[in-house]
Image (cartoon, rainbow, N blue to C red; front, side):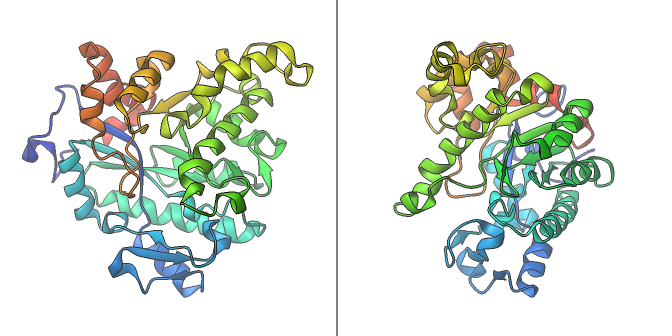
Length: 352
């Protein structure tokens, strides 16, 4: 496709063989979804002009009355395209945020309905992107029928890949109910962004915005550890990318290895946790040059993909420049900025 907006006009760098910068971690809440939630009594849109949104806890998983940031890019495609130009991003994978995953809800029918409407709305949203946006459909993990919804996103909605929360339906990711999901992802080689979708012990994290600042990185590490020790990565081989550089996980690898070596309860898998970590991918949204350098060194440049978390207020607005400041050799830099995403998701070529 030839984009109607884009780097050629703004001067953003672009590779001869395709997009030079592919952002795999960004979010949108399209207006058709928000209006449906409002009509159902699950959302208050009265503060949109002030850039905030209220959602029912059954949908959002956050406390009643908590204000959720809603920058215009979440629902306004021209505004998003302008933001891409400013950030030097050619192509962006857009996923629903965890605030509409319903990860903490015990109403499976509600979660499935909201998920389907969210996926439908997201497909319409990216279609307006002039070839610069592609969608990641939400998988309602923990619920029977999650694999069917994932397949619908890929086959009927034509999405580039998928995103999954770290918990759902009262079940962990290694619960047997999710076996069909991991089997589908493995069979289809579908890229899946794993995003924290709740925090354990929210009462202890309620102050200082710690649910997201601390709870989310810990949740990513917990979910990944359960995938490893629960044997999911022995039974299946999904293409999983952990956001926020894997959260706390990279720093915990030596301790996980030690537990696997010394604790009988942790000896549930045939290889050390470090070996399984080498099969996972990570985005660059770690917000610090030293942390990014360490991530690339530990994971390898072929396992790290550009991610921004745009357009939330905790996004990495300097992600492309941060990668370039690493002083990587040209091939490694190209891999992190775009090559790894294009390799893992070949269908991206049709969007740009």
